Image 1 (cartoon, rainbow, N blue to C red):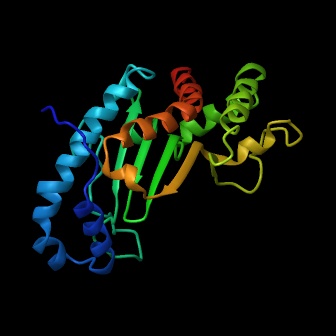
Image 2 (image 1 turned 60 degrees about the vertical axis):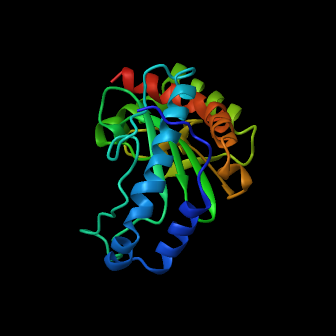
Length: 231
């Protein structure tokens, strides 16, 4: 499959805007043809185009234009949620690099809904084993220093926000006076950025725009990728 990405369509954003107000199976089934015939081909074309760009900085990146691969399912998992709305109201894609399970690897995340573009790079939530490796790396003389320098470098763009802090206290067994102690409070590590939908979303220029942000945030991906390689 080779598709040319020329931007997302107005129909795609209208679909998700309407889905926000009609998040039920009847409405979705009546409009399923829009999702299948318009939205999915646009997503697949985006994955192919972005995958080619990302390989220039992350040669082993997984960019697979299929649902449950790079493209997330539209169906929400409501089993353990009070929110029983059945559908996500956004497009979501994750380009990961590594041999482990997709969401246990560092990678590049893209999200589009009716109002905003959201971009993230890193690992949103560490597994228990990965959390231990991360914490040991934070206090390691070499790896901890590298992480601090990476964060400082990415933070030169102030709109790029660090994520994802989870804990209120430093874990047992670690020195609370360590200069990197605040980084021990994170349950995932990466950067995120969002901006409102603009005309660029509807053009092929979106690929270069998103890739530029991915590239600027990529040092955190490389640090996390190397960290996982030490496990």
